[in-house]
Length: 110
Image 1 (cartoon, rainbow, N blue to C red):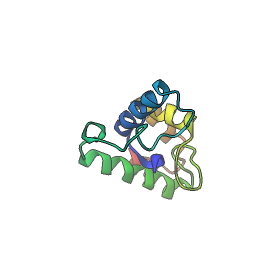
Image 2 (image 1 turned 180 degrees about the vertical axis):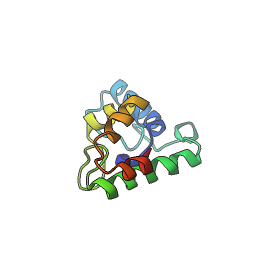
Image 3 (image 1 turned 60 degrees about the vertical axis):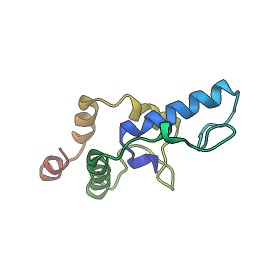
C-alpha cells in the first residue's frame, strides 16, 4: 500500500502519472503504463531502508492508534497524502512525532 511506502517509491508513481498525463489519461491512480505493463526502468531497487521506513510507519500506528498519513481502508494515500509524502522533510517527521504524547514511544519512533 502507498500508506507505508517510503518517499523513494513515489518516483515510480510520478513517472507513471506523467506518462498518463501526456497520453491524456484521466485516471487519478496509475497502476500500469498506457498500453502496457511496467518495464525494468520503472523498478526501484530494493533497499533495507524501505523496510525500516515501513516498520516505523507500522510502529507509529501501533503506538498512537493513528496512521502517519491519512489513508483509505486499504491503506492507500489519496492525492494530498501522496503530495505530503513526496515533500516530506526531516522537520516534518519530527513535527509529526512531536504529537506522540508518551516520551518513551516518541524516542522509540525517532
